[in-house]
Image 1 (cartoon, rainbow, N blue to C red):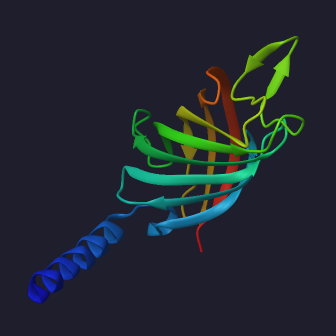
Image 2: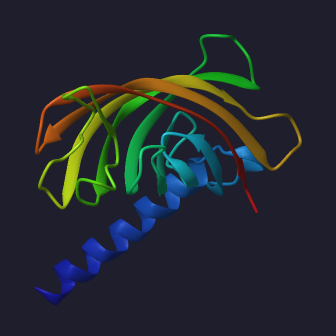
Amino acid sequence: MARVRTVMMMSLVVLGLTVSLQAQGPKGKDFGFGIVLGEPLGLTLKYWTSKENAWQGSIGASYFGAPRIQVDYLWHLNVFKSDVVKLIAGPGAGIGFGKEGSGFWYKDKGQKYWYYRDDADFGVGVRVITGINIIPRNTPIEIFLELGPNIGIYPDFGVGLDAGIGIRFYP
């Protein structure tokens, strides 16, 4: 049994190294951090798992209040036939914290939008992001613009629009 665990652990290490070696962020780096302006307004991280795929996450405040955390899985599509500009697309999820009054999305004239909560301590939603990713040649930065629907699923159903622009640095 110990031998099986050792083989499994070695396999995971080799797989992790292989995935990391294939990562294709700016200057061949796989991890970057930066800021995003929009929904949410805050910090952003990105981890490349291959030349075409990456995980990105953000933590910050929504323009409408309380803190929000989100994670997306992205594909980088070469529809522009460019080494610098790629189309990005992928699914994601977000969690917002706070009660009514701090509201992390908004309410207007009695209508609920996004995942505004009346009595819940948090809200959960899913999103689908599309946008443009720009990695200027010979620089350790990435510039991005993203847009997509955000669908609140708990505690209320609602739909809103997420939009953001940001920059990440790859040390």
